Structure formats: structure tokens, C-alpha cells
Amino acid sequence: MTWLDAEDIGIALWEKFPTIDPLTVRFTDLREKVLQLDGFDDDPKLSNEPKLEAIQMAWHEEWTENQG
Image (cartoon, rainbow, N blue to C red; front, side):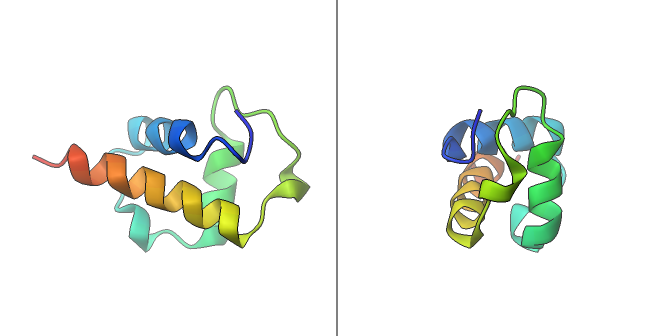
């Protein structure tokens, strides 16, 4: 996965952190969580606010769909 794979990253984040509301995660913390994902292989320097926002929204969509 790369920074451009927002949907795949969102799914992976939901699977790894199912109890965290994505909208409560700061972008600095989100970046670190993405870098820790298995299968993520991109330059950390290529992250930016629009990419992190897209990832956060994809994660939020997964989180919302899977709540009780």
C-alpha cells in the first residue's frame, strides 16, 4: 500500500484499531499508525494533509459501517 491507497489503508486501520473513532485521531498520530501497518510500503516523507484526510475519511467510513 502507498499513501494513495486511502480505501485499503482505511480498511486496514479499522481492522487493526476497531474501537478507535477515526475522527478523534490527530494527523500526526494517524501518520504513525499508517506507517505501522503490515503491507504499507511508501516513503514517509510523501504523506501530506490531503492524503491523511482521505485516509481518515476512508477509515471513518469503515468504522461507521461496522458499528453495532
